[in-house]
Image (cartoon, rainbow, N blue to C red):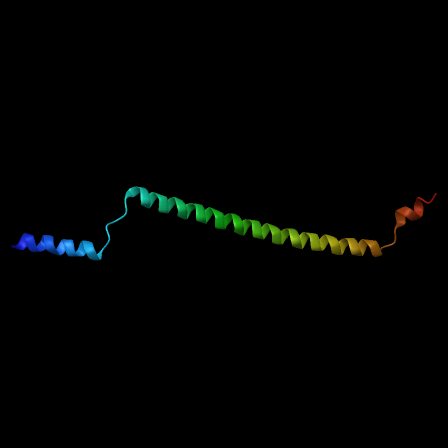
Length: 80
């Protein structure tokens, strides 16, 4: 009687706990997680590059405005 009860109990647990997925499903899940990680890393690096580019462009614009306010000595010496 003891083994029959054990078999009946394990069948009950099979209904409660789903069977583990096949190896192909586990590998597909792992592959998807890796692709997601690479995509998020790429987007973070791209966002930091865009932020650096905006800051550099802004500093260049400020330098250009400052240079436009300076006296143009080259034009003063090269009058024709």
